[in-house]
Length: 483
Image (cartoon, rainbow, N blue to C red; front, side, top):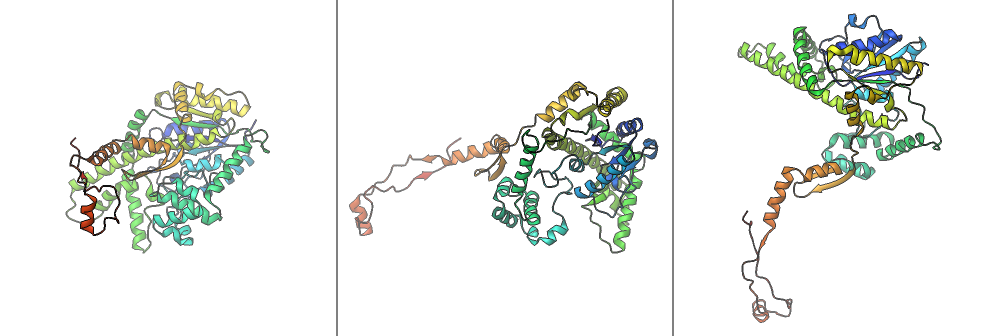
């Protein structure tokens, strides 16, 4: 049995030391089952720079074809989702035409989402790439000038055309507010209406009498996972090793490339594309100082800048790993839960101990793949290992976020979900401000009340009949109660 869809090797861990694990598993499966590999890592699509982008080497590929790797020039912007989906599907069709098996490998998960699931180009509504690939693009903003306006103006327009989405976002979340309005401007319909239709279609597909039956899930997924503390140390070692194998030379070549472009009058956007890769931006202060003729820049200063760049790169790498894990747990897994049988095809491979790669990763993956391809019964993913059971339990037990809109008048904070509101009212800052507010609200009534006789008031004002018959209060003293 040849499955309709490709395999996926999804890694939320950008590790140099673990590169051999990723490479060996993908290549091992490809060599055993006549496969070809499709890269789904946005930075690895750029030509050159093998160290900073952590590419598999030619030797490690062992002759297995790798597609969409070293594919675009440094001047090109990072592919948006539509670009990747179009080109990847084209490659998948070509691989199948040769009778081979497509294996998709990478950690740019908004790419994999687009291939795995329908209706993800417009939704879920909070599905946006970290580096802005799904944000409002400059050319789109030029077509709709209102997207250049201040956030409060954009929000006011969104409240007019799509109040449902306007109430969903925090008033300061410009990116999501702009995205929702952009969808309306592009499609002429509220984003909330489009999302509702998508949910209805999914419900119909998953209902026996819904008019259309969902196809059995035909994609096999491997999630190569390491324990967080072990991973943290491994990531730091990865960055250290990158320095020893030529990271400085690569970042210097990138710096020289930029300088040549700017000298020729060509502006380089440092906020997009390869220039946002982890490594270049962290070492930019060091590179600028290294290439300056300022005599005040001594070796001690350079060493300090280099050390700072190294630490920032380690921090960025760890943060990105957490981000990728969070994406799988909060976006990919929930979408898998909506597809009949899909979670039964997600296998967590324990790569914590690299010395046990064969027994913990390769052998189980090869066995699962064999059963999958031959149409045999596969093991339950949770039975693969204790780690797999725990990781899947946590991933499938994500608390559903209940939408609401509440503003704390004491703290001047707006929350858009019940979970955020509960977290806020339990916060130390909120409780401290509440105590202060309650103390100030205590009213002192110890001073005697001065009652003004009606006739006396009439003498004062000239008309007692024009006043109310009740006695008037002269004043109330307010003060902070002693704590």
